[in-house]
Image (spheres, rainbow, N blue to C red):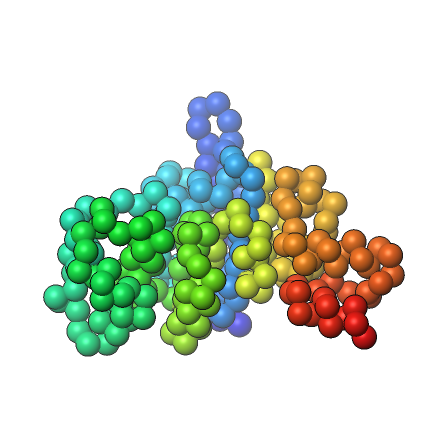
Length: 241
C-alpha cells in the first residue's frame, strides 16, 4: 500500500500538562479511517496540529496533498457562488460542484442556506483543491445518508482517502480502519470490526457501538449467531438460516 502521511510522536502541551502525547499513525492510499473519542480526548487538537493551527513537537511527514476540514471553519464570503469562486472554475470543476450543490443553493446567500448545505459547501470546496488525503472534522454527521454515499463514491473515484473524525459511531461501518483516542493518546486502533468487537474496552472509554454490531454481540452470547453483523439485512438473514 502507498503511504500518504506518517505521523511520529505528535505531542502538544501547555504549561500545566501534556494535552496530546506521542501520537504515531500512518495513513495509506485507499484505506479510509474513522477516528473517534469522547470530548477532550484529543481529536480536535490532533487535527489542528495537522492543519498548522497548533504548535507541536514530533514529526509530520506528508507524502501527498493533505487537506484538513475543521468543523469550526467560517465563511468570509456573502454568497455560495463567491465562496466557490464559481466564475473562475473550469468545466470539470463546475461538474464537481454540481454533484453536491444544487442550482437553487448555488444562487443563494450563505446565510439563507441550511446547515447541511453549508457543510456540503465546505466539503465541495475541499474536493476542488484535489487532495489525496482529506481529514473531515465531524461534518459528515450533518449530511443525509444518500448524499454521504455520493461523497464516498466520488472520493473513491478520485482516489481521495478520507479520515472522518466524528462521534457518530454508526458511521464507523463505512471505514476500513478505526482509531480511538482517549486522554490525549491512542487507546485502540485496527481494522474497524476488530476494534468494534472490543465491546467492554470501548464502553469503558465511553464509546458505544453501532446498533446492529451491538445486537449481534448480544445474540452471539446466546449462541443464536456465530459472528458479528453490520447491517439489519445481514443479521436478519443469519437469524433465518
